[in-house]
Length: 264
Image: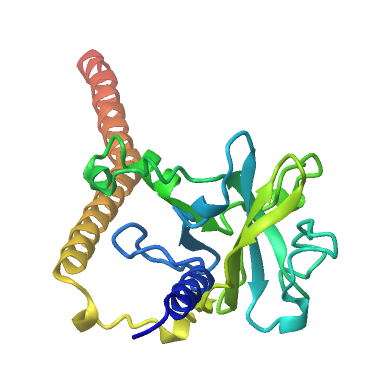
């Protein structure tokens, strides 16, 4: 029979393993389609990850750090020697190449009342639910070039590049880290598809695309036909008017000659 100490040791090891297995996760396809994109990655927010470290009468925030997969493990630290989280920026780390940079800061998600994922089907509530549940890395395309931008910059990621992500729980009062997740599994952004590699063969297109293409072709033909008809009508009008003028002048000449003949 196992002693109580052995059971307690296994329980502690199990809890330690469970804590260490926590890491940022890429958003489920049902919640974020086309994810990752060329320059963004949608992650699930850390719901219930840090509950054991939260204490009453304390204020906490979550930092999100980003690092390229090619960065060395030595440079993956996100705190200094005093336990304070780093404020490294995108520019200072060459976009995560030389180490992690802080890409976001947000409140700790409420584990007691998480957003209802069933509400994603509601058009009026879907946007708010997704904002509560997900965070999109690389979603700010202007902060790098705005000299007046003072908040945490979340600039676009590089295409066809592998990244890792980490959440850090920070005590807002003391300004020190209380807990952190492991670095996420490698997540790679999409590759830019070269125009020469884009398949334009109609057999690879859907039925809807073929119908739309056909309708657009007919509309272009009708517009072109109308344009040609209008141009031809404009060209023909001077000839018609000259013919009428010529006929009128001949009539006048004949009417002028008639009295002369009678007088003679």
